[in-house]
Length: 376
View 1 (tube, one colour):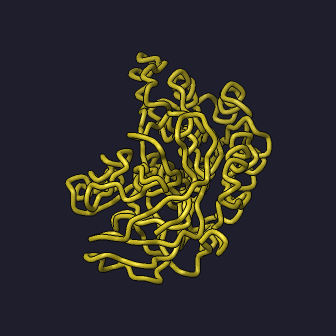
View 2 (cartoon, one colour):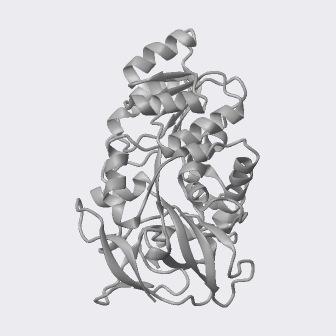
View 3 (tube, one colour):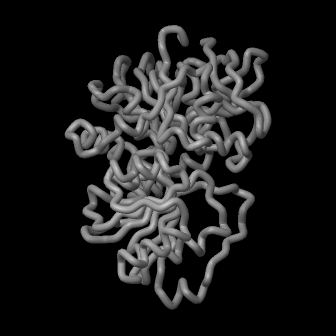
């Protein structure tokens, strides 16, 4: 079917709304009418080249929610009319990683940037001229329709608003899991969260629900720091240097037991300063994404050893998409997770460049593209 999507044809260029054509669902695939898509910083990494896809043009978007319209053969637990969230990590449940309990590291993820379908290895999306399109993490939620593999589709409670539901496809689940799973925050822990956008605010709420004592939010944007205090942070600082002094004072020099890095763009040169915020025997969780070309890290190896600190990488917050997405949405329904206030602004697809400008200038916790009948 013909539809439209936000694509880029080369690095450091604006998103362009163009006609695309998507294939019908084959075995194990699902067609979805998209209702909302979160505007995550990771899609901006496509623009800068920090996350390089295997080719151009690229269809962006990996954080979305919608309604199933059609299923292919072999799809048994999802049916037309179901409300669903897309997980940017496929989770088959059968590969060695999934069987080992690492469903966020499903072996199907090896093809996330290749742009070809899990089902048959073909390009399922093409431009109007017939050229293959590479969808972000095999999804491409910056389009009002998509056809995806069933392993990326999670059925949800239909009472959840789509603009809220889409957030748990990436940002909220990643941030929350960075705190409670990868960070393993325990009651009474002191926690520093560096960067309080969509992912950081998810981590902050995870720290609150895990029983953290002091929660230190660090962000250069004053408005975001104010929002962090409303979401449960106990202290807020504009930069790491001021946080260093503040955390040392509050903790009597012990520093933060857990540090969660959720900045928009990770720099290797900053790792040591983040570890300096972390207590001896503490854990620094690296959630933020840096350039794949950045292999230089500044790190005091002696202090890493002598103070027995942990530097922990994480993807999707170390969680299980098919378990954590419905769980977090149930917490939202019960009032234990504030997702409404994380949606700062809603945009039309044609306003995507305005949305990313607002994100980069610190005006959004999360911007959301909301599709309407005009997009169909």
